[in-house]
Amino acid sequence: MGQESKEPCKKEACNIQACLSKNNFLPQKCLKVIELLDSCCSRCDYNSTHCASLSGLLKQNSKLRDSAK
Image 1: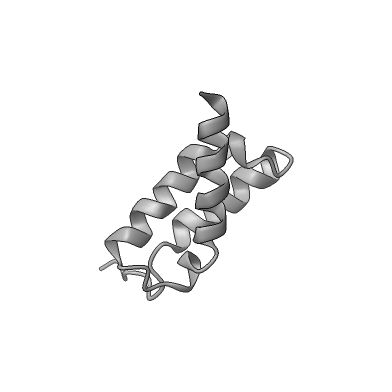
Image 2: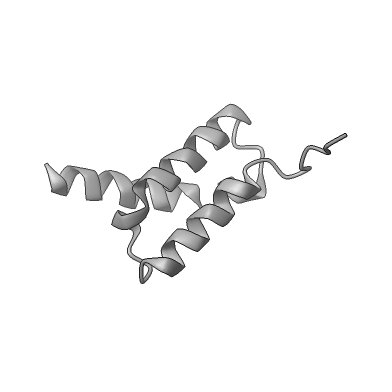
């Protein structure tokens, strides 16, 4: 039987790290994975250590989306 992670959203946080590393740490290249982490954190009521840094990413993410309009 598969064991659920004790830390929700770990996979999503790792995906962001991988995406940023692959894209010279340009968050605008990783908007999709950032949104996936936000969705995960929302589902677990931000009850994960991986959601702590999310507020900064989301602020940056919304600025990037606004500037793209």
